[in-house]
Image (tube, rainbow, N blue to C red; front, top):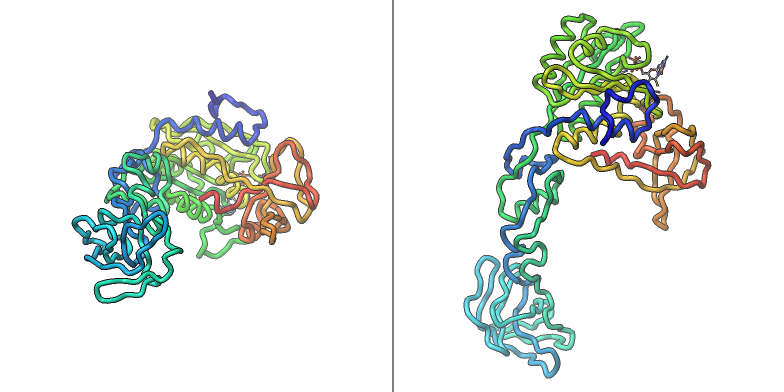
Length: 417
Ligand SMILES: Nc1nc2c(c(=O)[nH]1)N[C@H]1C(S)=C(S)[C@@H](COP(=O)(O)OP(=O)(O)OC[C@H]3O[C@@H](n4cnc5c(N)ncnc54)[C@H](O)[C@@H]3O)O[C@H]1N2
Ligand code: MOO
């Protein structure tokens, strides 16, 4: 049993301990709803999908040609009479006598009495008969797809929690389901804080910085299939902050902020959050992303995560902590990120007893070996290096600097999706 957020005090937490404790914030999954398959992209299944039919339903032809019963060994008959047609959508009724054949199109049910299909390209076709070009090359059962060879009736084809992608949407449709039970999109409120934080589109004050984090959060939340409730940049007005947060906590499944969580940072947001719920402020042995806050808000006990203000720290902490939290909200046991091994091409800086995530670019050589290099400057405000990156290089607590040639762990960025 993991310790809850509030039991960890001021100690420096490992990434794993922080992730486990965050999971305890989620007390219930979001509700389940039924949606048309066409609208289900990116949604998580709430129930297992069991096959009510065999797929394919019938044993059928994999090629256009003729269907016939083929002997296991010579002598072969090469000139064969055609006794009918089998089309996809219109089966040949009755039994095909031995030594005769029917014309067949791809997908048509294999007529009774036949076991083999010979494609048109290997036939010389007459009006009511065919001649087989090279009978010694025909094998019994060729070009036939067996009923249920893809999915057997009664099999669990997709398990609850699976995220529906293009292939799985097609699979669900292939079973005849028009709708699926999925978890509702988690509703996630986001807001930015800080007097310097300025909305894009407005003039930038001399000590200002444009609000970046709300937009990276919108993008990452959309990738995770969440519904974003944008609370903007909350003003330095305690009553307004409290009201906005209370409303968000009542309506949303999760509230995320960025900024204002570092040690000793006292501001209105923090005071409002503490008034509305229970908060813990953490230091995680992680770079970037050391300061973090978490808790629950209002009577609804809505989970809250306060990410650090630096734009790269927001993205890294989201990928490691918020992605599993969103999985959890959608009834899933959080799955670890995809980790691959790559050979370092550049020196990579890291410190023992801390997990360092560096932005990297990985490539694959002719032998299929992965190589990775740093994107360059790694300051946690340098978002251009996040744009260049296609992976995070993860140097764990037990690893100091890595040298060129050393094997390191990478998390491809697409694996967060
Ligand atoms: N004495 C200490 N100072 C700091 C510590 C520490 O442990 N002790 N940690 C440093 C680290 S690491 C980080 S990360 C930051 C995190 O601090 P906060 O979460 O309180 O973030 P802020 O101070 O509000 O902002 C940090 C940085 O990010 C910019 N920012 C904030 N919001 C946005 C936004 N929406 N869009 C773009 N940029 C944003 C802000 O202007 C600051 O430059 O603390 C260090 N300090
Ligand atoms: O969270 Mo800070 O960005 O660790 O450098």
